[in-house]
Length: 433
Image: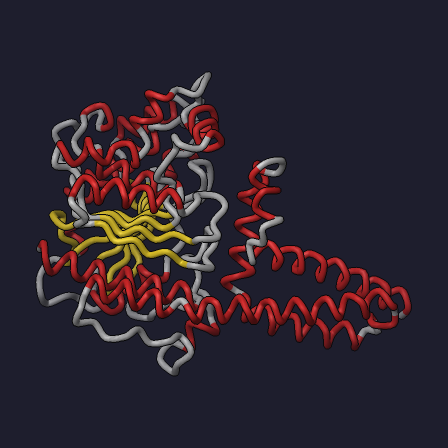
């Protein structure tokens, strides 16, 4: 029994240290950001994933910690002095987690301000701490019942599949990435074809998948009867950029030809994307119908009606670490090529897209504590957009306590950004259908 108690105490001590460190990072204290921006930059992505998870699940973690404390006590884990010290640290950590949770709740005021700017007649957003949305607070992956999924539809043609195999030594996993999922309401619409939201997943152009059904997508299907499409695409290291962009355009081609069969309007497609997916969404909209990115389907119209970015990588030029990573790791170039970067950085293309009549409305959402795709990217993009258009067409929603990932599971923050996206999409459709 003493051996078991020692084991339980050891596990508890390490778990407390782990979550305490993550919670400290979640507050973005002045000592943390410079450390990861210099010596530990390559670990920033792991830090952001950890801190995002802790922040968005802070209420769940408090409950989990209370359960763990009872189990540790039951198995005699507090028979050791160090365990008691860690218990005090754990109590302090739970208090900090409570602060993170209330920071999320308080962001409803910011969300309300943005919704009012989008639609002056809108009603105030309801808090997630209410009967209607409490299920979302309890179950982070809650999904409405009236949704039908059409999974793993290949958008590539036979020639493109053969090319994907031949360029990767017959890696049959590559064609599987050239697929999409369609989500529709199980209750058919009586008002004709519905608008389409296409989401492009993030993952540093290197990992991630189309299989996540995001909170804002669930609301748009359930409450607005939109058709949702989640797109997969080929990734590095086996496929250098701009293969990613070409695949997104192939998916748009498929939707233009086929989405009507699922009740979607091929003439009203809105792109959304998180992180690297935000970069691809912006690039796809700003390079509409450019032949070099549409090999074999140069004449297909790949235009869209709007773009939503969540923590979008909208600037791959300004900061050296972004420029180096994108040039050498994503595009597989031998050196940092400034000309190439400016051709593939959405921020650099705003004026060009405006001149070519390719600049669609944008909704930018970013966390002010994001250390991976810093919120300055979205701020700079909005400033450039405003200069090009006279201040019309681009909305920016900054989350004061948001990190990089705040949109995958239900939390107060993800509900509020979902309501902002819902309002923006609704108004975009009303004004442009």
